[in-house]
Image (cartoon, rainbow, N blue to C red):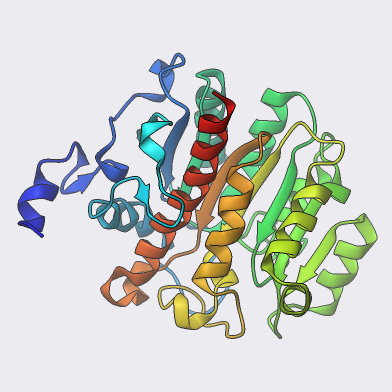
Length: 324
């Protein structure tokens, strides 16, 4: 196995002991200029706390990068090394000021604009789920039209506000649906389950025409059919499809560093879905949010998030390989 600490120390470093994701090159976002297919950013933002002292997700970009030091791009499940076909770079973290939500969200929008203009697909690790709002807003501006969304989550996250904050982690899909360029019928809430949802959230999703694929439907129909339904719905009338994952779409057994919601997806089900989505030609971005490192024994959830991107990349690599 070799000396892991010595091998990890040889990887490019972003800051302190934090390596770039998978040890891939560090490139400034304004210098991409067609040099990458996928550009990774961290967004260490945590806004309003919505449950007790449950916090710490702003630390996740660091622990996810550290977890990635163990891995390369080859997945024997598919017989492909993503890095043989895709150029991935790490653009580092967006500069965040926890006391300035508006300024931090502007910085997120600017990062996404830079990545898209540089010719790369933006892959983002949060942070809390509120970051998806400025990401999707910037994508819709750059792509000049609506972006469909496959939203993996236990919860709708479509409240109008929480304790006076309209941009809390439980509100992003309400804010996205309100954007003039959005198409709410192309928003697919996937994996929804459990009593932390409220009836008015379900009613709002129905009222705007969003699609809900609950955990019950996934269990009845299977993940393969369900993710195809999610993608086909999200892709109608849009410029592309964005994939956003809250860690709690996973069953608590697979996600010790996330909210403790049982009866969720297995890691295998999520990875199967991401592999399928990565193979679709109009995927325009990805994020994975709400891992809480202080509650994550042995970094299990951070490793799970690393694997999630690898399965998406494997699908993208297969599409690239097969098009040649």
